[in-house]
Length: 257
Image (cartoon, rainbow, N blue to C red; front, side, top):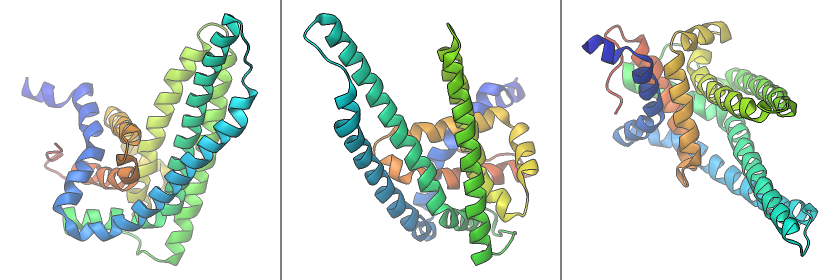
């Protein structure tokens, strides 16, 4: 019975969900890692502030002027409906621009943070030494993932043209694709440092699918919490590294909460 409670999809999902949040607790207990969080935090703050400013400017000066309006009740209804849709689309644009661009620019620092986190947990961090060549490789990998993500989201958008259930199907699949991408995004720093490719990373995630989806959902929730958005990327990097270390441990995963 105890084994069943520990090894079921819901338990794995919840454990993965709390890893990004546990990253904050781990950072609070490990002050020597703070200096590796400072630069990504400043980058994220600038990028998020810029994304919000551009999003508001785009909405106020362009989108809102294109929404039709009139004195009749149906024009007012249409106006507020389209206004709500425009707000949601602008928020989505801000969210993805912050997530993607922030990860791309701060990726070299995230790689170093992942290495130091593993060192703090295991007492060693074997892998390819951090260098200018590694920075180039990291940036190339981030650009590839960005292209794959954009193509995937564009293809999923086409589902909205399916009559009836197309929008519902798009909502479900885009959510699953996003949380899966977030799991790929943040575990890639560990596998990249080990000189391992996407095949090994896919095998790791595929064997822990519910945990990976839980982790991605946790990151998505962090991005939705005001102020914590600025810390989301380093918390996710630390959380993903802890998840990898816990799964690597022969004694099984440690306590996350």
